[in-house]
Every structure is written in C-alpha cells, then in structure tokens.
Image (cartoon, rainbow, N blue to C red):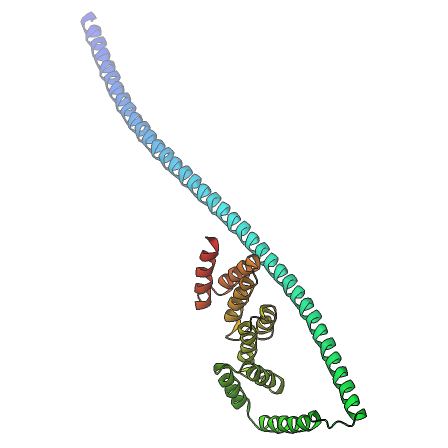
Length: 284
C-alpha cells in the first residue's frame, strides 16, 4: 500500500515538473518575442527621430532661404527708392536749370526787342530828317522790293507740302544756310504741327543753335523735343546734345546728370553708348 502511494506521488511530482518546464519555455518564447518587438519599436523610433531631425533641418533651411530672399528684396527696394530719389532730384535740377535759361533767354529777347525799337526809332528820325532836308530816300524803294520778294517767297512756300518744306529745310541745313533752314523748319512746325517730321524739325532747330554756339538756346530747343514729342525718334539724341551743350557751357554737373538720365531711360540706344564713353572721360 505504501509503495503504491509513493508511486502515485512520484508520478504527480513528475507531471508537475513537466508542466513547469513547459511554462518556463513558453515564458522564454514570449520574452523573446517581446524583446524582438521592443527592438523593432526602438528601430522605428530611431528612424522616426531621424526623419524628424531631417524635416527640422529642411524647415530651418527653408526659413534661412526665405530670410535671405526677404533681405535681398528689402535691399532691392532700398536701391529702387534711392534711384527714384536720384531721378527726381535730376529732374528737379534740370527743370531749375532750364527755368534759369528761359529767364535768361527772356531777358536777352527783351534786350533785343529794345535794340530793335531803338533802331526803328533811329530810322524814323533819319527818314524825317531826309524828308526835311529834301533828300531822296533809297531805303524805302529797297524795302518795297524786299517786301515784295519776301511775300512771293511766302506764297511759294505756302504752296509746298510738308514733305517738300522739310526736304528744302534739311537741304539748306546741309548746305550751311542755317538761318534759312531755321525759318523753314519753324514754318513747317507752325503750318503742320502734327506732321510726321515735326519732331525732326524741332531737333534740327536745336542743332542750328548748337552750331551757332548759342548753347543755352539749343538746350531749350532740345527740351521742346523731349516734352512735345516724347514718343519720337529724336528724344535720345536731344538728351545727348543737351549734355554736350552743358559741357560746352562748362557745367559738368548738369551734363553728368543728363547723360546719366539718358543711360537709365534708354540703356540700349547708341546715344547711351556715346554717353557712357563721355562720362568715362569726365571721370578722369
């Protein structure tokens, strides 16, 4: 009986041991699985952290680039404001200078008118003296002939078309007959103010005064081209010759301002290239 009990107890103990061993193995397997999952989780966390760091770096780079672009835009705005200020200053100085020239020209015209009136009064006095002394006046006959010739010339010019007047004026200019050319150019502008050649005629009037070395008057005539015919083909040339006229007057400051304005407004023109060379010469 005792032996039977012992056998039964031994079997029970053996069975319990087997069960415990299986539980231990199961726990080990579970632990291994958990460790693998933990390692995978850590790896994923590292990858996510790496991606997050990369995104943060990209965001920082983008912010840096944006800040640099914003700073560049601010600098460009400042430069544009400076250039606009210089342009406004140039226009103001030029207007002041032109106004001074206009005032000077007006005074000169006034003096010439007074001289003409004085000369006319002297002629009248001489005529009265000749009449009083019974002298024959030859001037009246000459004047009548001159007036009749002038009237016939005017009638002939009135019959000419605008193209014919322009060609005649340009031919006179090329031949050096400056006074005749000036009168014809002025007549073209007066008779045909909307002519396709009006801006050219105005420019050549300025050129005539420039050749006569009356640079103040030339500057004013060139300014008429710039103001009255801003879309014409002589604006660039007028600005260039204004600059040259100021140089001939010894006014390098205004000459430099006008040449710089020409380069800024018409950078690709031939006149701008000439202006650049002239400015380089002024710098030395």
